[in-house]
Image 1 (tube, helix red, strand yellow):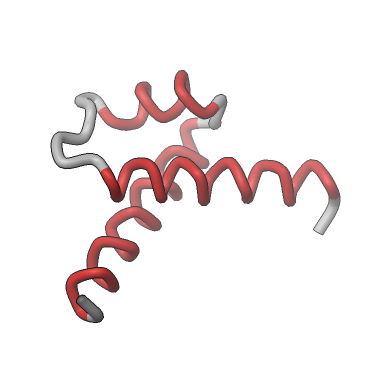
Image 2 (image 1 turned 30 degrees about the vertical axis):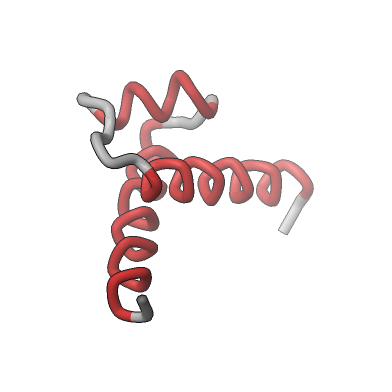
Length: 62
């Protein structure tokens, strides 16, 4: 993984963690993540999916 790829991966993970922590996620989500974290549309959708997995794991192991 190149430095740029790793940097984007970290941004997606940070966005996902932030989104998973939101009680009331912003709407629409993708534009909010793009603006807040500087993500592409694809990265923002990846962050949404990752956030849902984070929430699921939190419920399973809480």
